[in-house]
Length: 200
Image (cartoon, rainbow, N blue to C red; front, side, top):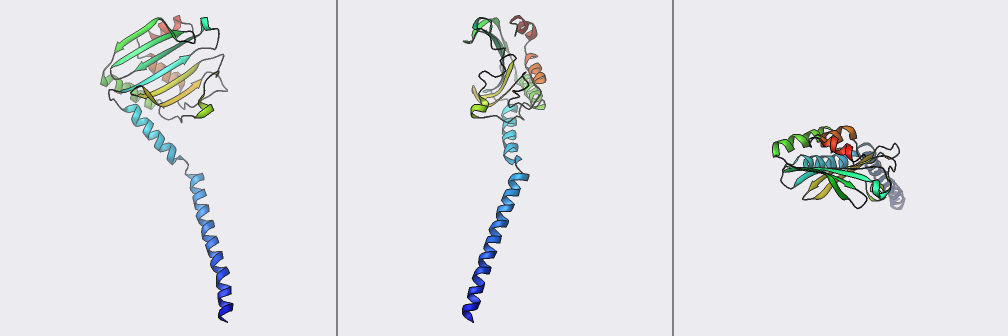
């Protein structure tokens, strides 16, 4: 009789263990499916705090690349803003030869703070940076413009988001490229005139 009871309890115990494991697996799977944004939210919070910091070693940068054409007629430009300075640099050729359109201006912390808060409200810190081949922009949008937005700490990029004017290459930026580009160029007086001269 004791042998019968023990042979009957072992399968029941095993069945209960299997059911407990299955329930734990289902709970884990449900969390992964229905609450996947916990990591993204943390990443977004980190990006936002990096963007909104006004420490002296912080900066933001926009790089715009024109269509992929012959070296002699290829153009790009960069607008960089930090708590102490603002620059617009125009380049020609793929070796980034600086052309005569270069502007270097001072800045101050209150002006920088207003600017980065405007960038945050325009969702510069909401994109999810791509990795590997997905983040390789070589050859992307050959007939249009490529926009890259970076948050910098001590000249090192802590967030690097991009998009393009080509429909098939949306990139990693979640915000409006027109709004963000306008915010950057508005930091440099006469920027639009200078940019128009390089015929992007």
